[in-house]
Image (tube, rainbow over all chains, first blue to last red; front, side, top):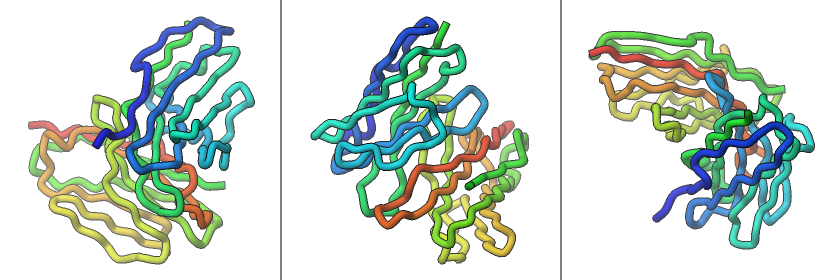
Length: 113
Length: 117
């Protein structure tokens, strides 16, 4: 049973560019959340998707957007990249309606130069 | 607004010592969940425990134990007889419960635990 998978593992972009990160949830999970973790900090909640809609959003600008597909996989898009967007981006999944733990993926390390 | 404070940035102990990681939280919600996660150097967050706000029973799992005190808004984590493999960054986290399950997590800044052989 595969856990949460994310791609790519690492990514290097330059300021102003756009990036798309991908996440496949754990089997049987239908809710996907994205987190940003800057170096030396705790993860910060970006948004959560369920039934292909954004259900909850953290304090992130509109440059951060997402999508969920019918197979529950998800994408995180970041436009007009800033140096401060350099971070580890974590995807987490769970089953809706259950207060179970969120299972986290290994993350994508984004570096913006 | 929710907030989680982990005042201990880094703790270093010698193997076999007991160590307690502190977590203090703030929320206006009456129903919420508290979590502890472990992040080893590989980076992947590993779930350790979930506790809901109406269950104040302490929990023990092997060498790990958790002390939830609603009166002081604390959810502390103790490792007994620490081992080198326990070295990692530990995060305490908080979430609301919206009826559809736990919402997005609010994390503390983490405590870097170093277990020296």
